Length: 349
Image 1 (spheres, rainbow, N blue to C red):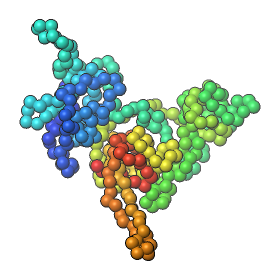
Image 2 (cartoon, rainbow, N blue to C red; image 1 turned 135 degrees about the vertical axis):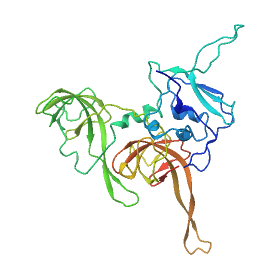
Image 3 (cartoon, helix red, strand yellow; image 1 turned 90 degrees about the vertical axis):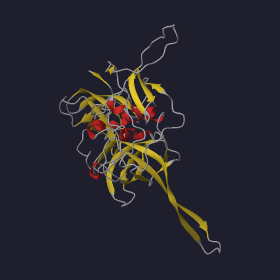
């Protein structure tokens, strides 16, 4: 169907009701950008806007468009139109044309029909795709009844990619693709100190060869060595949801609980867990700002002891929520200027 991508029409100076200031263009923005494979909506928006995550607000996208946005494809051209009172972004197809004198090839905008190719994603899919099926947040004991490996190859207990494993609890062949998990660390709310879930540690993938007791599986991917006792969970199909970055519908006050991978600090591209989830109003596509909470410490001038001074909060990063559970969410760190640490605040930007 012939269409103009109305979701990508931008009134740059329009003021969003929930925003303190209207979005600003970057200094010396380009006149146009030709969409190529590997581009993301976030990255393209960053070529024009100082705060790229704000483009859904000021492109007048409604709730349905945010959840099911118009798609953008390689070959289209984003043009900054300054002909009116306010600059606008227009989307068309990049086509070749020549002047009557046989001048150089140039690009022109035009109405574009959906091509037979893959649309670009909101954020880098190669970073978040592995997390769509893992990490897995479970209640205590939830994996106790899951199928599990009981033995590895002959003379060995540890299993790796290419090995054959034997599992109990898979009586039929209704599920062929499995994810392998090991019961993992508790997720502790930094505010209440309550354990609100357990992060099952993702080990790899397995494919069913023969059902029965025990069932026979081939290990297709192994992030770490797989052992008897490790659990098997049906692998969901990869599904990169097309939600676009947007503010939460309600005020969110969350904390960073952990940085995935067991490290002490994170950076741009890291995945963090937050102590708020679906029950608190978070959904896929929400953008939150990270704030550093810091207290300066010094020795009193009279030497009587230490003096502690709270430092004003510093906003230093944005995170994009891409997976939610009831009380826990996972988010990708974007545009971080300093290391991310556990306990930092995450709030509406």
